[in-house]
Image 1 (cartoon, one colour):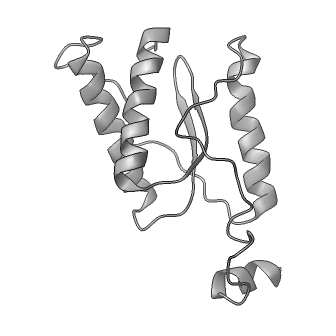
Image 2 (image 1 turned 30 degrees about the vertical axis):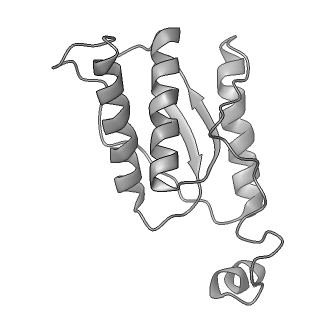
Length: 139
């Protein structure tokens, strides 16, 4: 499926609802005409669960808004995931995702559900002696 501008707005509303309901932290999002990029912080849900939540809610809202019919497929599979541990990798990926729409002339979209990246998991206030932080610092 190719998303029109009106579809993009519906998908963004669905994503905002999922992020709020599931308490995900989203650092960037690009809703492209033929695919989506999200950078989501580690959560108790697996990546596969998160993808299913985003796919289901956006499919339901697109259908509810009349953008697609009941049987129309929206997503072409189970999604693709990459795990990023280092803040430098997360910063690089945020830049990549934010630049995706720019490369096709759509410009940067600032979604209300996107939070500024705070160098998690090594952000201020995080326990520097946590096993995760120690592992990252030991590299």
